[in-house]
Image (tube, rainbow, N blue to C red):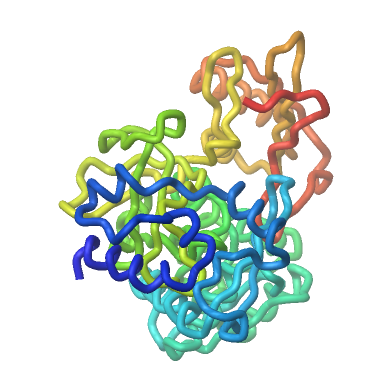
Length: 410
């Protein structure tokens, strides 16, 4: 089916029973062209969905079928401080998610012969539940690593000869550092693929290099998705800095966050997604908040994202006229040396946004980071050292950017 045919089928299947979109798209029929779709159909936002769930508790009205048809519950991690967004799936929509994750594994070279270790505690966050179940459906031996300290996880993946590790980039680094601290030789590990998701990092060269240095013989494979959308992109072996959107599962657009108009290929914009197969709780023209840049060399009809997810539109800060993204700072810090952990304090002085970097390392590393920040961003950003092990560690999404009281959002 073509993207337009998938869109038309989505409209026909969703509008009759879905109260949220029946109201939002009242009077609209299935689009006659992709151009008409982009011109006439309004965006869907996270704020809208949260408001809908407040108005129709607890799950909102974006449900295409009777509540009795739903068997799966997930919710967002609410890292931005807002209330979590709740999401339900029927068995059919859940299976659609698993098929997409199977594509992520397959493109990374994972096969039924692999043993997949999931280094996370199972909660209501979607991402790794679908990875776990997709790997099992592929015939992999899947090893749950929830409810364990890092040392126990390391011992388990060594003893059971795991070949694939699923983790956030942050936790993959933390596990590698824990191995060094506890005298565990990861050269003995059978891990050959590290599937990372949950935060930008897998497509950031310095982060990827740090993970691969800690895990000898392993190759980092990036992926991204969202609880409310599902698994979206995959990476291929030999293309470490490109994420490809699953074109048979999503219609993807890249827009100017301010105007809402499409940006030319190669320019940075916000990723907008319509999922074709999650009919139970669909999203049409959903503003993800993820900033991306469509690769110039992508084949016709295909969207490839150069550099992966560049950052979040609401995470960018403007410091003395310079747009600063968290991924750019992490690339600089990781590229300068082996900081144990770091965080960025966002404050305000004389009505101007200011940044301060704290990192676990010595004075020489702090100086290198400060110099590279100045050279790359043309900003003088103070870099302070912190005792080893004193900064927070994270198993899922890292929260390294800390807004101090009085700091303005931009």
